[in-house]
Amino acid sequence: MELDVVYFYTVAIVDWIPLLKTEKFKLIVLNSLIHLVEKKKLVVYGFVIMPNHIHIIWSSSEKNGKEMPYASFMKFTGHSFLEELRQTNNPLLERFKTDKNTRDHQFWQRRGLPILMYDRKRLEQKLDYIHYNPLQEHWGLVKDPNDYYFSSCSFYEQEDKRFNWLTHYMDAF
Image (tube, rainbow, N blue to C red; front, side, top):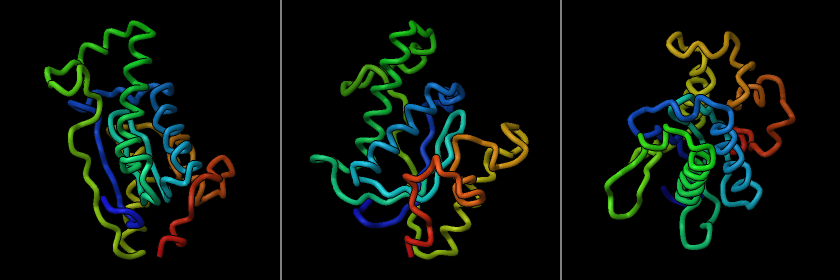
């Protein structure tokens, strides 16, 4: 992904394990996004945190040290997941063990999927997809997309102030 380019980004937890089903792990993801936005490394236009994957519409403003902000995001959340599972002695940790030389545990699938948002119409389609994801029958998380706490829907539909760190998508194009 390049700097100052808007992407729809999807990445899943390894083997689609529902690690993000619990609020504690969702908050790790959310707080990491907020931190990078506050440091002016990322601009986030929309997001949803599902039980085993995330969707984000974002752009990187500047590198975070030597790495791109999305890499920092993936690395930080992975380390935080590991720390949380170790502290709580959670047996789920075993499912994330890997035999790779670069690490002992892997939480995110190796390759996320960035899709270039080249115009407002495409961005709006992806934003609708993100916001309606929690309503899908197989998830059954909420009946109204505004009721799902870990989504940017209420930012757009109800001007929810808890998302003051988000940037309105109309500012992207």
